[in-house]
Length: 305
Image 1 (tube, helix red, strand yellow):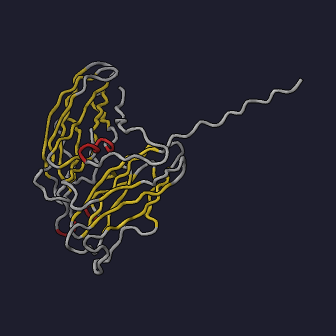
Image 2: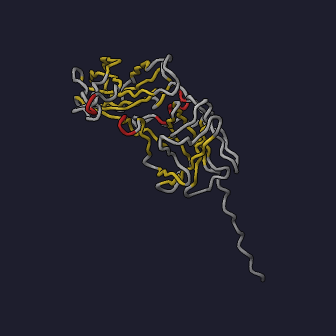
Image 3: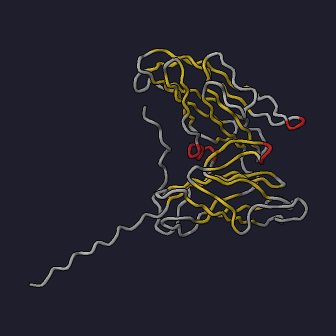
């Protein structure tokens, strides 16, 4: 089965300045979609590919299921979607809320049978700005329950996570350097602006290249990347909850060093999520290294006769 790749939708970049796509969570969601997950069931490999990792609250996400087997046969699975409901007393996770359940029959065939697409609406467009919700999608054998605790893996099955976002409550941009180096590490700036009438006493969040999960006890959305290391340099996110660190109308710029973990990475997707006293913001930015000029080819000198 051919694995679907991320859409290559960047415009041609100039040599000096990386060109950013317009930031829009619904449009940019496919850039951070979860990796394909596979469940082994009844002699078949059932692959689940979620089409996006983030979406605007109240919109839809699709799961594409394909079953592959040496001999053609039918495979019946359950697709369950649960919303994380946070923590209760004594820091005990609340039971998740099931928001969708479907029983689907797939035709397993050599090379992959016909895909089955399940499209699900998540979240509400009526949520206040800066609100996030986390959903876990489980592909399971028919009749099997998902785990009661989302931090536990299912006994048999596949799992992927998706986040909904209600929109930014303050402006935020992710800015690469004007001159992106042809190789090696570089820095990006995350710029936020306090458009409220209240001074911010804190500004903290996460930055990464992929969605690593969700943990309410550790700041909510978790961002990381298997290909990139990111660390704050200079003035990073901070705040002691007492002194005003960003006055009304003021901006704050946080600098992060991005270090590729191996050579040959030329395309970058950066995700940032930040919270302040007055709300939150989340953005996704993509950019490429400048194209390298071909090496000069010297013509061998012809010996005089």
